[in-house]
Image (cartoon, rainbow, N blue to C red):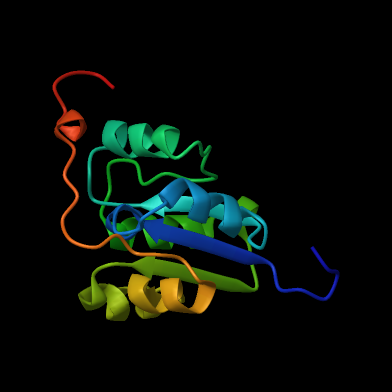
Length: 136
């Protein structure tokens, strides 16, 4: 990363990652220009960890048993995730005010995908193997 480049902490909402045609590819792409990358979700931690593994990704942070709002506050307050910019990519535009209230730039997944050249999947993709039937 260039010396004059901003330090960036980026949080993907799990639902935003699931809207992508190639979440693993997007993660690889994003890791090239971010310094801290993780996932925020209200889903149970075991599910978020499984998704991260599915995407071949060892996140710098996971949500833990907390709300998105609590996660954004916690991440921003951790010295190891200090950054010039905090970006939250979400599929839920109603979370924009929450993100901005806690000092995060909000980016809807559609806009982020358009800007970065990522493809969104078309329609509802549902894989029955995604159903949690035990420990992942």
